[in-house]
Amino acid sequence: MSLTSTDIARIANLARLELTPAHSERMLVQLNSFFDIVEQMRAVDTTGVEPLAHPVATLGDIALRLRDDVASEPNQREANQRSAPEVQNGLFLVPKVIE
Image (cartoon, rainbow, N blue to C red):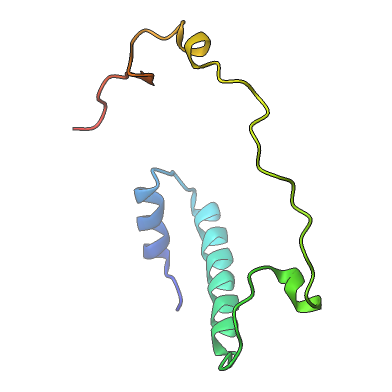
């Protein structure tokens, strides 16, 4: 897959970016080199290779040392919402911005 200057202009327009011709050309080269790498990775035959849950799993059966997921801060919802203009059922109310 290879992008063209037209593709870069369209992507920049969708992202609301204003690119100079020099930046556009540099972006074209960078994105195309990225897609070249992706194509190289797709070309590798991975038949029979199981996906890894973690890259360290290639070294053997290693148990990860993860800390326990425990709440360390007390619930201060009311104190945090005191300065909010509007709150309902513990949620911040904001004006609708999308039609």
